[in-house]
Length: 68
Image (cartoon, rainbow, N blue to C red; front, side, top):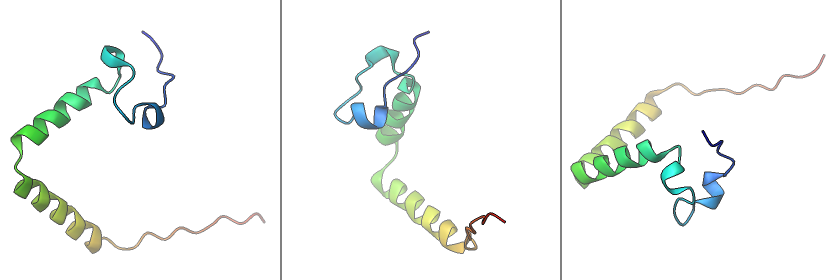
């Protein structure tokens, strides 16, 4: 197995540079299937529901650890 040394977020902006060796190939197929089989209205409903859930969550506080 070839180890992935490509930073996909940078190198694959205009398309995958690894082709068939891309480790994320299975996700691309699932994404294409989702886009083809889901209406835009359904996608918007899903996004709105996710926002509603996010707003209902209590705030997450981040407290720094100060050295003693």
